[in-house]
Length: 563
Ligand code: ATP
Ligand code: MG
Ligand code: MG
Ligand code: MG
Image (cartoon, rainbow, N blue to C red; front, side, top):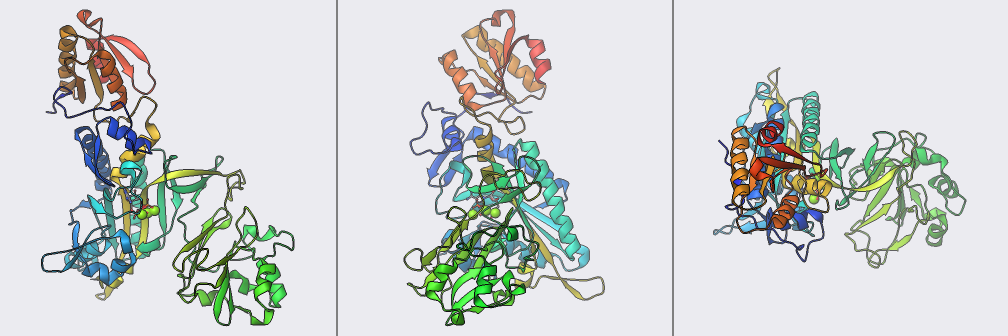
């Protein structure tokens, strides 16, 4: 049977002041309430109370993963480099990867995510379509040498993730596994008491197709997203990749938005250049002497013709179509959002030497294209971001004014397809006896990050304020006085414990009731039960941590109420 947790014996040291370097609520409060301790930048120790909350989150995740047929495994965090070299990610991850050598000089890494290794596991274990579908998951420590490991446990360099991977013989199977995960994630975040939105997202370095993020709105979040107050529309302004698929110009909402001639559109440019304003305008690349000087993509319709004219004579300009972008998504990425394309990232082509002019799309603030010089305004390898969406822009679904908000990415689901299966030649024998290439999904939840997100969303001026499912206890019993109070507090604690209620009791001697009350508020257990001045009569006071509502109850009433 579970034990009553006695504060007199529990390693918990609360602090009155915020740690000096803390910027976010979760960092301040988790440290002050004695849940975590910073070991190094982005590296955290979970103390007894923190570990309880962490384990509660992990339990919810585990239960819902098991419910969709997930099988739990545990892979190593210390990994050989070869599988990641095979997939190209050993290079791609760059500085994000922790790399190390063993005594023989062989290269290893600390796993940032495990697609490669899971693919190898399944290649080893599954040989027939009858062995599929399979969903494998683990709750495990990940390592990423994040550039800015701030924000407490929100962004660690060592952190805990639930990562799962689905393996199917058909595209329909993958779609089903994806839908199962999506529904499981909804149940998980609802049970955890997190406010969240689902937004479509980029596949990015994962190299997949369909992908959605689960975002928890909070000012401390590092993602920006738009959502509609009138309908359920939501989109990430940062992470949605437009993979340079030809998009119908006619169907595009921005087409009518033509401005004055001094903010010319791609159509006017086309007219100026004497080319038909038709299919070629879906994707536009302007080259001078073979060098790319301007890129237009759907939605990014305003090219500053005047500026362009300073550099170009029409005869020098070559318009190129969508095919020219085939396989060249290193050149340009855009972001699909409520306006169609919200954001454009120009990734400098290595052929563009410092000093070359590079004309970007307009941003909404100045509505004019800028002329940007490589080497002066950005480095060859830099991204240039042009955010076009703004708060108040019309929702594409219903027209209401969109809100622009910050959020924390708490989960991310991907349909990877066959990228890793191709790398490792993961085939199973199909129904007709021929080999079938397996298709995969990968799905992540930041388990440690979810703890931080909960704090960011639920804490108040007094401190932490946990939803019941994740709280380190159901009730915090406070012995506010001397022997009589302590005796009653311990007695009621044992009775509650016997009734299956998780109890934390503040039985510390020599600590004033005032300090105990402040600590109880800070620690954030949902119910606070006080053995105070009416203890001799067997009367307790029950306080709701969130609402502050209080009522007096007898021991029997308190036990009935809480169990
Ligand atoms: P972010 O955009 O915040 O850097 P990510 O997109 O790189 O996150 P994924 O690769 O999608 O992260 O990993 C799956 C999940 O793991 C994320 O949705 C997030 O909840 C969690 N996660 C990622 N990086 C960290 C980190 N440094 N610390 C804590 N949790 C993290
Ligand atoms: Mg990241
Ligand atoms: Mg992300
Ligand atoms: Mg992600």
